[in-house]
Image (cartoon, rainbow, N blue to C red):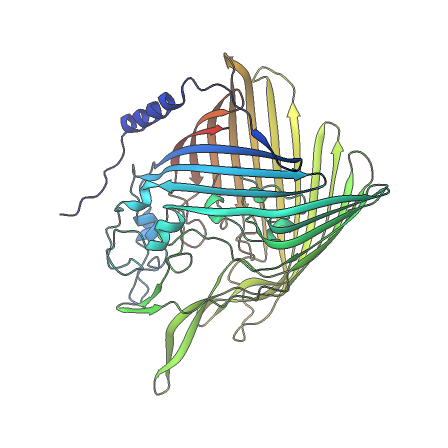
Length: 533
């Protein structure tokens, strides 16, 4: 008999939380460690340990797993995007994860090095799942088991993140900084949405659905050379050149937040028609060279700066292309599919930041030439190139003590995307998505200090909304299509700035729609513990 894990009761969750609290009870405040190495080299290190437990709270939406049968193919329209939804029923754990993040900083005079790595193990992806549809699962083997790649990317691994050397030197009033190695370079003023920084490297998409996450916090390091020259008077020049190409790390096929069964780690086949599947071919990836950026920034006043940018990059997001061949005399059909990452995209951009009264206000505008967009053809949505302009404006404001809390932090961003032109694919310029789209996202955090002895409390409330389905995938973070709305409420207790205990409820609003709102039934609750040494 095949045993499946049952829904987890609230009593079980409370018991696991209590056990974790007992484990950390009595720990005093700790600070980042340091030690000296020979030759006047200073070393500092930090270590953060975490535990997260999350549970799906609602059932699967029929519109996302049992779509209408396409008369032309004989299969449900949702057959290639339902595995992640089917693998988790209401009450099932979506995370049961322990994690660690370590950092080491070495300094010797005006040179140094940075090493950063993380590790985690998530027991959820080493169990059987709740998939009860062997006819629609997009994998070989047991239908209620995760793929090996899903177990790797979401089930547990150790990885090296940053690993670079740096040096800085002053020549009179001019400063020169140099960094070489695995690192993140992030320009622009975007907060929640994908602006300039999104063109500077791959992202960890598994973090994209965390409420309120900033784009710069999900970027992954790549091998590159970065330099900045700072002149007297507030003017600076910066440049980077990538030494490798790496795509964005997508959710593995079958993971909780996966909405496509044909892309991502572990994706191997596509259902074309009833009884007819085609395999995934080799990915078409750009070369390691040809990605670089230049920036010019001017600090006009103590609070105001302007920036100009030019970037050339390769798309880190995938495009699915069908491989068609003659299967009978005069008859053509898809025989395989492959993933292509478009290369050689140009971006020109400008940014500003300033203060208006007590608020910090910032924004950017960027122009992309050659970015990946979709047009409708006889084979369905097909990737081609387009020209797009995007505008983002954000603000950060802190309210003084009032009747609600001792302090309220307000962070918000609004964005607009316009498709200015598109190249034809198979003779078609008919857009699969909308020419214009806009979105808003914000966080209001109520802060209460010393609610218990040496314990602080923060209550973050988030909301985001997307109008229109953007022509550029990921233009507004993880917001997907027209009418996608998200909200969350959380409570985070912090003890001496080292121990954090939090709980949250995360809601995906709007009616379920496989093409525009595939997350509409993915509400979940989570608890987490984090301790920093």
